[in-house]
Length: 114
Length: 113
Image (tube, rainbow over all chains, first blue to last red; front, side):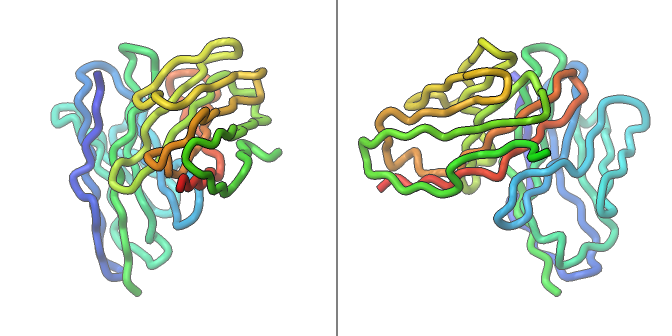
């Protein structure tokens, strides 16, 4: 069974700091990878996704993620965070070997101080 | 075009009471999912429906039942609520296809006393 691990549970940054959130998955076959964001009091929405091609994926609001197959990783990055990036971030994976059910990581809570 | 809607937004139950959470989508998606979100636990899949007429258990199905009433609607029922079911419940859909992302509803915040 596939699993997703997010290493940072809570991250606190000041505005303009750089961000990197870790995500590792366990499935060895073909995967489809996602990062979702949940702003306070809101539902999850897609930040970016990877399914093939260029391993560096750009998403909304200046976020990007890099798929490193050899490391089973899909880390999320942003060069300069803003107060409005305060949210919870979830990594998710869907694998080709099974029922295509997405598996989510436990999430990372990001707080950005102005 | 409302996307994914959920009712109610908030609910307080007493232990042993029953209730049904409703989810509807107007995107003509085949697959629908129910998740619960608890602090530090992320999203855990309760049940899903790959298509109209089919339902399957997810990671944490105990204490819940579901009905895929038609392509648009997927309801989640708590027959006898317990305090451990206090959570935020999200419904989600996928258009179909391996590459597609999920679309989430606004959530139902349930408290069981």
